[in-house]
Image (cartoon, rainbow, N blue to C red):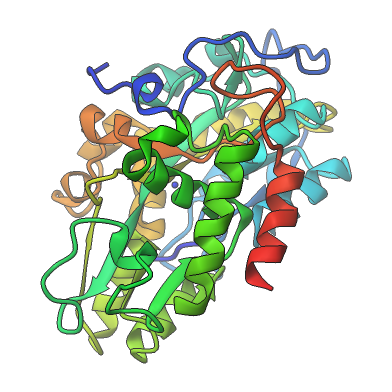
Length: 388
């Protein structure tokens, strides 16, 4: 496996990860396709590592060449190492599409870099999990701007030998009296401010945080202060998954936020054993989306790719290779490991809706309070100050 960089009473709206049906400012005008014609013979995409495998990483892992054979669209893949890099690459206008995470999608939509998607032209969209459709990170005012691909929670991982008793709360990494200070790892990105906000949402309700991505001045400063206090306790900020795997395996770190795949890889190495949980306060997470460029040179090939990549068999392959829950409900019948979807809660709407998915912070609050929130530029500046 590889990784890059993921209708109940607890809907995303209730959990604070959605806009609650709030009308959002209109993005730049864009028109969705009305039909899909013959492929243009080529496709240029930006993807997280592991999302568009062509056999060059592992000769047995290849879903790109079958697509090329089926459609005649030759696929050229540019790996995006971070969301910021993906946004910059898409802005160049040289690509037809991107597998964007939620901390990039609204930047791409409001930047005019991507177009609405006509989901009727993507037949496999019908059986994508409903809890991933038309969400704040992949749509605006009921208009879809992409096709959900895969998702997961940012879990709390811990070394089972070094961390006892097992943690139940994010306080293990945020409490200044944590017995694990100096051995704590955290995600190296401005979007990690949301993890602090989520913790404060539950532990300091007087702040009135209802959405960890919609923070006014006071709420934002509280989250920043918490992270500045946490800074001396950090052993390693990780951006690449290998950084965290190595930090746990060397016992430089014994606890911290992680992707499920990171925990799996640490255990597969066998140097230490880790377990992972979604703590009592809940968790942030990701739901990646395939988006089409507003000026795509090969729109027909991009539509064919979006349908192909979420087809049951291919989505199952990607999910197992990457280590995430597939967006396609029928993929769970196609996984080689028949316990895979259970392990990743792939069809568990209650679990999925408990996650506060990455969503790009905007000055117009995602929770509908108006133009009083800190935008992503402010988050980026603060993150630089936090790390010092």
